[in-house]
Length: 308
Image (tube, rainbow, N blue to C red; front, side, top):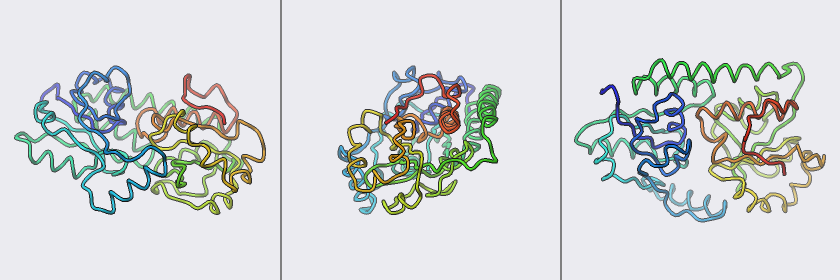
């Protein structure tokens, strides 16, 4: 492996990890979803999403149809460009075939290359796995010390926020909507973050996949706080589709809505926060602690959220 390896990132969170450890100059290509930090937007784009529709319902239906049909991937990849870039390391994932290009597609591509780059697949299920992934990427690109320093800083920010959580007082039930139509609740690392921040998340377990639930399940959980952060959607896009929730018969019956406190329901940019298991997951956690425990000073500056 060369001392300055040429890196392709096909995963937004991996791109953020690479930049967080001070190795952005190694990035020679990225996925179409890799949009942070802005300094990497000049790198060639190597993937594109297949046309899936515009509304949440249309996208969900298209994804289900493609997956059931046995389609190789929901994403197309520019193989010719990758050959020309001659990467030494490719950062990817196998956690979710919907969120980003799948590992099997990347492995097939690598097999066809004249040289064989190292594949680093990041599949965190908790914030602690994210800390480990920072070290893994640092090792893969020969930036060990920088990766360790970045990890220690993020770990300190995480643990310092926990000091504001009272573990002896039952927290509010939180409904975390990772998709609006149909209703999916957060999984993987999200339940752990909510519970550690002082809330409860009855509709899913820490480490479990995001899952679809029925309105009856939501009503039974009696959430007094709601976070709407659909995967891949900006706040503007969320607002465009809020009617699919607010005009249902069950939405006005939720405790968070009945209480009429606007702070009970927030919209969070799902394209940037919570859904990306990278360094900014610590920002998302600090937001949770500040929001659930009325400690506004903990919410990171410019954190992308709005009250409903």
